[in-house]
Length: 429
Ligand code: EPZ
Image (cartoon, rainbow, N blue to C red):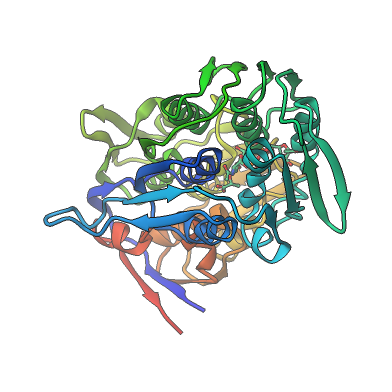
């Protein structure tokens, strides 16, 4: 199992190209099931989760091809993926595939919308929480699907097709908003999604669906209107830059000090995180190539933050912020409101010398003068990168174990950080 070795202390200086967003690429790839024509996605990140989803889509019969590197193409540029679900040969997504990557459960929407049936394994929980799918099931029922739970699978049927309806989400849910928007695109009549997720990845998917012929208004707001159409066509769409990767590297620079251009980053997709980082003491400057991040040289300020659905502070940056403020001059309070168990990084950060107290969903982080390198264990995707951030500022050597978690969501992290002066290497064992 690969490990990452870091020797802390070096400031980060240079440019980091931001990859296509994992959490936009996954729903965009799944949208290919909605049409028998070719969907071309540009700037697709090279990530383990994308590779896993390719496997699941080919299991359904989606033909896929990747454009080779063009002469002179920047090595860090994403790949161009051509997906053609000309003939869906299997409407079953089995446990052994779905359990490896939860978002693959989302194929249930396009499959039942286009084929009138789907059998998709319940994804099960994960390290950060039980992750139920009751909101997905309720939404598909609202759209006219018959749903049964059979042997750990969700079995969805709509022999006469889905029909538009009003869908009210009891709680903001990114995945169920994606799925309902995709399913409603092919339903008969109008659908209104209320209390919909407002994440930029929802807007990215809606933009792509509209290019495919869908009729959608209001993506990015809490109320989305979808007028169903008979069929969708192929299209070409670039995956948006990854706002979580952007926030992660901005926190790394704030942690180590330095001056880095986060190339292609889009500020308004993570404005709340930028505001928090500015409070902590980073200088963040939007430029026409992305976002420049500089550490103003003196100490880090403590902050009080609560994670919220977009446009609030993203839960996917909570672990990274905790690593950053572990070195602040004072006490910070971080409240996690989205997932019930997203503090797995606390005990690992403590091994590096962080002083963090947990009380239910509230973490109190008392800044310490220094962190000291140690062996640590990655537990989930974002927790693992918080250990990398801490290791970049810790004195001595830090070894992060189980970096397969990292590879799920951060493309070539050691190249991107190493290219800015960090002492970081992958140890393949
Ligand atoms: C998406 O997960 C992201 N994943 C997550 O990123 C992100 O943390 C999350 O949204 C919140 O922003 C992808 O986009 C692939 P939710 P999702 O439905 O859609 C509860 C990462 O690190 N809920 O918005 O699964 C749920 O348990 C990942 O990239 C139900 O109760 O999240 C959670 O408490 C981690 N029933 C809350 O809602 C449901 O049917 C929000 O979940 C669905 C969700």
